[in-house]
Amino acid sequence: MKLVILDRDGVINEDSEDYIKSSDEWMPIPGSIKAIADLHNNFTVAVATNQSGLGRGLFNLDALEAMHEKMLNLVEEQGGSIAGVFYCPHHPDENCSCRKPKTGLIDAIEKELHCDSRGAYFIGDSIKDLQAAKAKDCIPVLVKTGKGEKTLQAIHSADEWKNLLVFESLSQAAAYLIKKDHQDNA
Image (cartoon, rainbow, N blue to C red; front, side):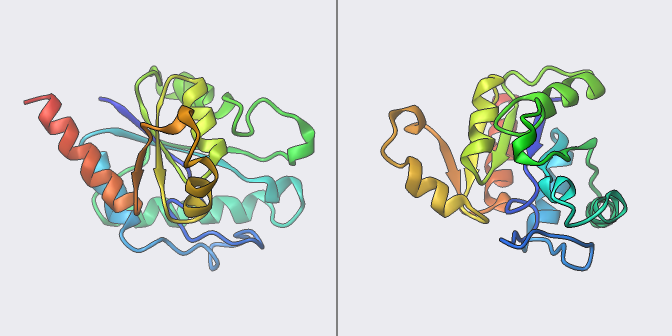
């Protein structure tokens, strides 16, 4: 089954400049949970997310796991599943190999899920997501939720991104990818 990688904050759930620090603050973007469940019927779905709030001391691992448990439970209630949630816990200054735009999270997805990410769709809302996708030969997909509008404005004239797939939301991106997958397999 083909792979789809999703960023978390701003793609699946509402983002905040103050960071999402608890499961109470973790609120799904309307339609995103159903979109993940729909994707699950056609793709292996993984999440790759920078969570520097851990490294900054804004929340602890228990709080992060509670957020992810909430997300996983909501997706399961809709009949879907996420194969794995992969996160970078480091502060940006730590220069780790897993913080997007570096590819360590995608490497971990490949290793743990025994798959190849080349040609996988990577849906994100930031330039870091797009750069990580491109570095691993994934197909970058931008959604306008979260930081997506600002990202689109920042890259709108760059030739590097002229063929970028852009959607209003994860719901629209999922519908397109599912339809395309059906057409490709018809």
